Image 1 (cartoon, rainbow, N blue to C red):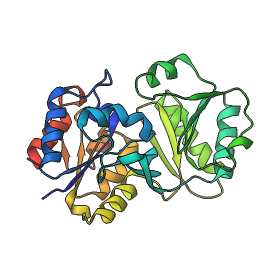
Image 2: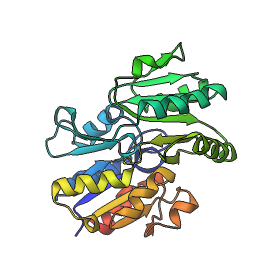
Image 3: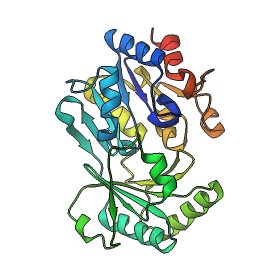
Image 4: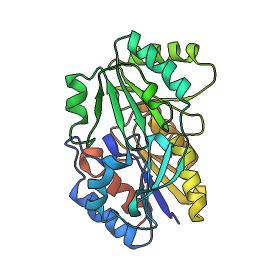
Length: 271
């Protein structure tokens, strides 16, 4: 019996128009009523999920959670209480930022509470609008103001896949210690501390709740979802997901994110 479902947002739970399908909302509410923990597990900030939580009836609820920043933060929905963080060292973030700065990339730096963006462009504005409630554009590449803050991750907008692969390789050569590096949304290269990924966070939350790994379903579509798809008892890729994710998933949905893929999972494996 599955007791928890951890679910990616963009290109998985959310339709391309950034909404949740009506049938999916209905099935999630039914599953939660039956006792399932439904946990958004996203690369984004937990603050960006608040409207979705309200729609699903999970906003402000004790004992309900969001995993954000690719597993760097676990938050209880009641009062958005931070339960766990796995921060990225400032020095590592700074090295990566300098590489992105020299290459003229758009760079996102996340703390627990804020998103700072360097070299914003129209493509990023269009993508983030409706997904992210707010951000601050940096006018100065000096990052000293972040030195004493908790950095959750840094990501780079790299539109072409070949360029993402090349950037990852260059960054790995620059780093003095390994980090978790993932691709997401077919546009980003993301860097987290080695202790932070969606899989480790899902299992950590499960342990806190007395839920075993084989009692957890993970649903996603892209590279940053692989750790949870591999770690949890049932790993699911949605029909619109990348082939390399489908190759390791236990199940691939018949439906895509625009046609209630998550509802399909709940109906088949939970209800």
